[in-house]
Image (cartoon, rainbow, N blue to C red):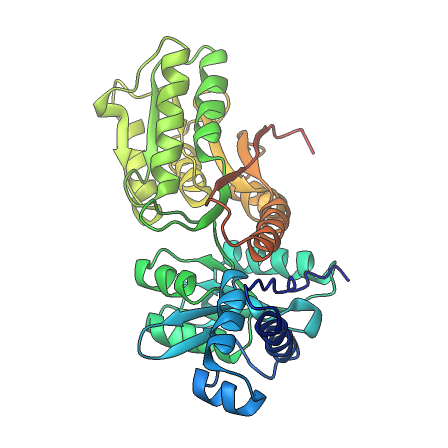
Length: 370
């Protein structure tokens, strides 16, 4: 089992005896935290109570508490005292990592994408002898989600959510946290997501290399960091190839409206000769529209889709019958989960690390490739 021990408290003081007494108290409190006697989210006894219990002065108590605060194990809250931070929960004591999903209310409502993400985290933690706590936050207030994280003694949180209040609460309460498959610039929390920009570049570059010149975009544009990143990459890829994306070939739609939008676009006399559709459901819908109009994907219409590596054979490829499977930009859930868990371990060991946005590599997978 890979362990991430709580670093020992460092206590310094000008008074020799006071320094030793402060160090002794800090070590005792640290041991109680490590053993789970003082759990994340709870408050320490008051300075007065600690002084009376241990037979030392309040200044000595304060010195010990400041040392634990400097180590990131506790945090002072005005008018409340010192709260034990969530990072004090240790995986080596059986504390789980929490995976928090905002997209669905109950686990049985999770789509294949998020079920696969959950499995990826379970595998990454199982390899370390750890466990996972899964939680849907859709119907819960941020405060209630925090209560459940604290009650579950989670040592960290992987957040597939963009609720700013929740992100701030998690960060303020000392949880090592990383956003997964999601990102927002407003909150300084680490994020791990697929390299959307590079995916758009790869899709546009591939279609341009085949000689396509009227290349359209079908899919979301402004709904998320994913859509903006993929679109920006596609535009950059076209520019690199000496092409552009005209406004009339930029079709913004969600998956539910993608087939109708594609049918209308492909029925035009000046229809595009290729389409970038960087969402699994959208690319499958474009394929259905093309077949309905008698167009053969790969011969009459160039197309690049998008898929998780883990869902390529079970979800993406079956969406294109009759052998009309287009290339797809793919990325690995296993890589995302492993990267996120490693970053959480780093964050737990060093809470002052600057937040990073980490991109999981993507690649262009051709139909005949493994």
